[in-house]
Each structure stands twice: as structure tokens, then as C-alpha cells.
Length: 246
Image (cartoon, rainbow, N blue to C red; front, side, top):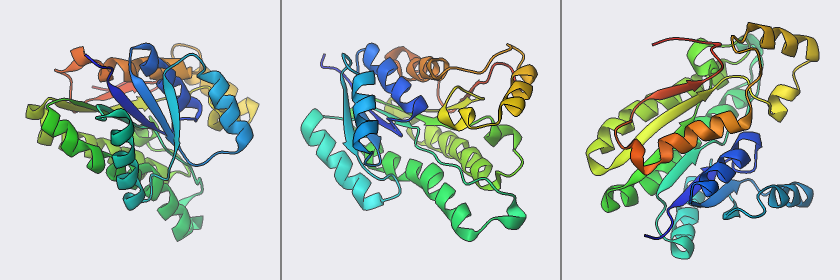
């Protein structure tokens, strides 16, 4: 059987690049989708994924027509898209009282509209072929809320609502749809937190450390496996025990 094709949005970010390598290591041909980067950033990504079957494609998840054209182009080049990981995301943190409409709209457009724009363009093909895996990267803050993140938390909680509804729609078609909700991980976003606050965060995590992108990537890879066909509509928290629920 030919290799399955995986598309990862936000694919050259801290989490996205690790997810790309993990999926490639499991035998997928992976396309990393991201906004057109600087030459230095693209070179760094290329060096990071050297030796893996990972390809870069520039695109904007907020552009529905652009996503349609992208999927058509990728299917012509690689064949069917069997796996979609929606990992593109941004923050525009500010309290609601001070939040400007564009700060709300920007986050919802990337973090939630982007999930619709890509998934809607691949789901019909997955249904027709009787196989597909969709994994949406949410956040612990979509479960717990976070000060200054009404826009981000609304989008991330909305992602799992999307997951549950779509999982019901496609469950009998061989397509699973799941969410992974990372806690605090060693990414540029978390590294920007002042050191004293980072130390407080680590103290509050039961396992006693910040997560690594590889922790998230392994969870995504598990849900994307062919053998994970009986798992759908779930939210898999990967947060070191920082938020525990059932």
C-alpha cells in the first residue's frame, strides 16, 4: 500500500514541526502548511526535517478559496489527503475590557475558521475513500479558561465542539475526528513568559516539568494511526496533570 498523506497546518511552528517529523517517522508523507516564512526560518525548518519525508507548502488557513486550491494542488501532486492535523494558531492576549474587535476576529479567524476551511475541503475525499484521520490541536486553556484570553479560549473550546459534531457525522465512513489539548510546552510562546512566572507554572504541574513538543506529537501520531479506528470524538489532554477531569 502506498504511503498515506498527512497535511499539518502551522507545520513549521514549534509543535507543528515536531508533529510533522513524528508522522513522517510513522510512515506518512507529510506536507507542512504555514504562512510564507522568511528564508532563514524556512532554512531552519528544512534542516530540522532533513531525512524525513516532509514537504513545505505556503498557504493561509483563513482563506477558504486558497485552502480549496491548496487541497486540489496537493491531491494532484501527492494523491489523497488521508490525515489532517489542524495545528495553526495565534494569540492576541488582552482582557476583554480592552480587547479590540480585530484582536477577537484575528484569533477566531486563524484558530477556528482555519479548522473549518481546511477540514471542509478534505472531508468529502476521506468519506468517499472510507478512511481519514482529523486531529485538532486545542489547548488546556480551552478547558479551564485563562485570564486575558477570552478570544483564544473561545476558539480552542470551539475546536472541540467542532470535533464532537463532525465525529458523529463521519463515524460510519471510516473517518475519526479527535482533539489534543496540550498544556504548557517548550515552545516560543511559552519561552516568552517571564522566568519567575514560568517557575510558578512548573511548580503547579504535577509531573514537575514543562511539556515537550514530542509529548504532543506522540499523542497526535497515536490518534492518526490506522489502529485508532475505535477512538473518535475525544479530547485527549496532554498537560502533565495540570488539569485532570473525566
